[in-house]
Image (cartoon, rainbow, N blue to C red):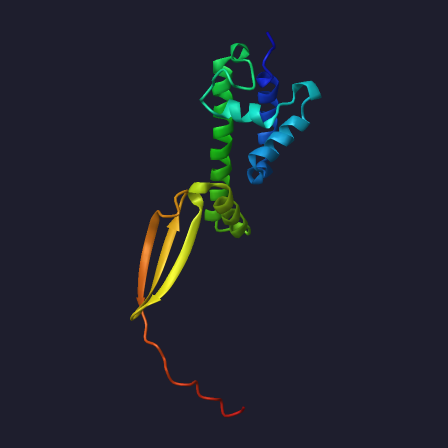
Length: 164
């Protein structure tokens, strides 16, 4: 029976996730970075990475299920999940810190990295008002707020300045 690569991978993952800059990485990029810290024989592919992340372990899995320690798989998921929470909290701190000069950058990363932080805005001019619709989250149909603003259309031509 072949031994699991998870123990060595998990140790390398913990070391990589210490760096706050990993927040911007996709899963594939994170996998590449962790693999770079390992010997060639200990590296894993995308299918193994996805297998470890999912709770659906079956006989078609890329790794021998009998060689896996279920507690280690749970620890892997916990480490990965906790890293995402910490990354989100660190970015949120930058948004709420009045002395932070990079609040916009933190907002940009939060909105693009975390599905639940995504928002979209739309507006429409109706009869007698403008409606702003703010939606967000994974489901872009999730309405956060609707704001109706009354307006009056100006139909006259703007007057020219006397100096022109």
